[in-house]
Image 1: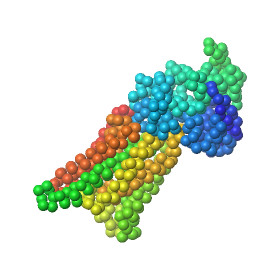
Image 2: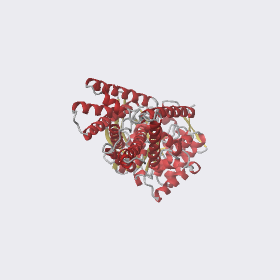
Image 3: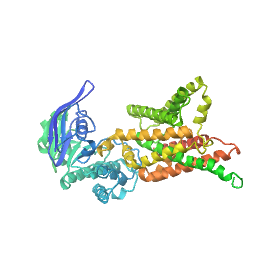
Image 4: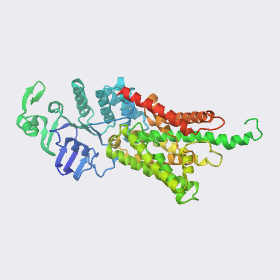
Length: 251
Length: 286
């Protein structure tokens, strides 16, 4: 469970995030949505202790992210940022192996190797595990990064727009895999999504942000309403019934 | 030498120390380059393209001018200290400008190195110590004799330390955010790496002199063949570094026999050629 209380962060004079109060229960997929500059990524980065907060507290599984040593938090949460420029020449398997660092400090045990293999299989990377990252396509590389944070075997998984660089086929596959991680492996997945329809289809809860604040938060069905989405995105949004639930139409 | 009466003695006084010095300096400088490349996430940095060597030289000349009778240990301490501070300044600058993958990084490093080296030259000119400076900047194994090189063994400790912390350096090479995610204190790793690089560069600069481009070409060649997993690469980086320095040293001794050309001269030419080759290869790959 993730609990944010009175979280604020300011950049310069104009942009301010918060105060944010938010409670994300254990298990399931929670999507952070909202217009550009709403503060979704900033909030996620703060939960993942990559960015310090100005005020307030964030607790992840009972650990205050400001006070808990980073090494200990690495057993509880893992975070994948949107931009990853890894110039190091590693194979997929070596990269995923570094997700085990909190457990083994680099010397992989048989248990670690198993976790690495599981994560690789889970993201369908077995055929690519010996390839170097710079020989992969953007989508394959993205999956390798997700496999790395999955191999960390933390209760909470934070992902910042993991569908970037992915085509339609791989976006759907990635969401199904994350959904399975939440359901089969019991992880709590928090994910920043650009496409509201992906959130509607795969997230249990949607948290809509705007101008640095949480404006709507609840089960996906409650957020997928024309009036709510129109307000959040400042665009006329219609919601129609699709074959797999509500679809937002705004084109 | 084998036939001469004092052959055995000559061998022990000059040849054995020279070989040991080649091995230690070659391994240490190649490894410093690799650690630096991981910390900065830039393929083109190494102690001579980031100003580290020049800072070590500045520390050296400063202590020799200020305290003419300074012991070898004091001179080395000054070289290490200056190399450490200078490299930290460079890294701090890199963090500000965020130009990690670009070629601008080594260009700025070399410019910084040129400025630092000008300051050293100025000081040397003021105090009539230019000759000393020249000897130190042209890396050469000519003057390695028994009783003068033993201090180089310090870098063997650096090699061991890098081996122990190898995985941490590889994780740092994945970037600050990935490192933090898996619970590695990035800042500490950078400080540790900078410290080890400074010690290796400082000691090698004082005893041997500058060995340009060695830390650049060796890790890049190894990376092409074996990737970047530091722990499994370290033996290869050490061996290739030793092989290249030894080959360049031999070449330097044969080219104008019976005289010697400093090894740094040969390395500079070989290194520049390989450097350009790497650039072209990177461009071809996009």
